[in-house]
Figure (cartoon, rainbow, N blue to C red):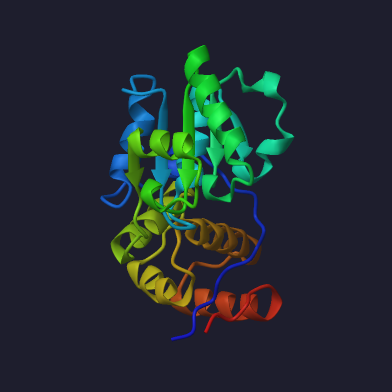
Length: 225
């Protein structure tokens, strides 16, 4: 069946209330909740795109008052700014391994914490610098797996409930196989349904969401084959 990957460019809402904890992300979530009592100064969270790494990272950054930076832009970071807690996302995109190693060492020496995210496990990272590789392999990490139907349905149900929207299970069952399977896309769909139902003053039913998806495909969705 063709799927409709939502592409609405809606601003993300990284709140604890919007994060659905399940078996697929429980270990990664635990690392966020036990901060600052980490056994090491750095932790790595791994998982595929859309699994919730950024959401968890932003929850930690807010709690720790940490700075956030993409690994692909480390060369633009002011070295003086490294003296802080840092969230570095997508470290597999690091262009200069020495900069990531320097940040790792600097935060440890200065007593700061470092949360890293990656699309792959540490032993699959494309690094060749021995010192960096050894540090990444030695640090604690947690892997988030791609959410299954139970997780996606639970996340969708929770986000509708948070918005005080009554949505039947058959609506959720209809939507899931027709959208890209990620927690980020669940959030985008719930946002779209909420705004559309409010504007049209209609209840959320299967025909309503069917029309919404079909209209969205024509206006702002790309067909996924």
